[in-house]
Figure 1 (cartoon, rainbow, N blue to C red):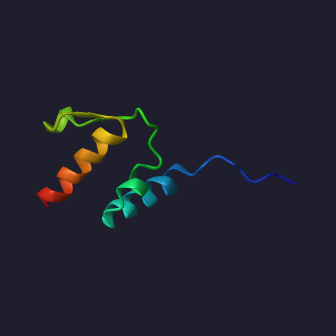
Figure 2: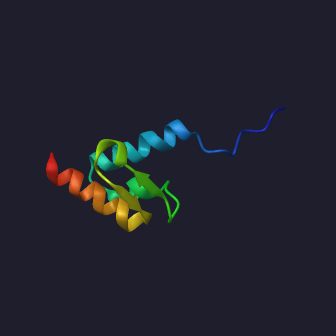
Figure 3: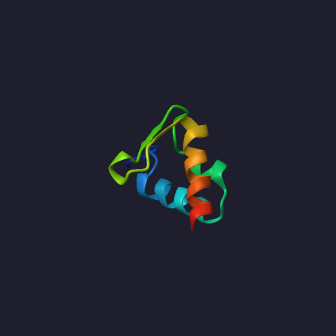
Length: 66
């Protein structure tokens, strides 16, 4: 009998993170990110954001702009 996978479903993880952003729950939004993650938004002219603090600031700014 095959064992259940212990690997997180990346699609489900992304869905939960996006839903958390919709609730403005930035802690839950960032939960899947490693502490030194880099969000590269240079192609959109928005800059690069490093670590939970940098990405959180980007998300807060994004929320204020909509």
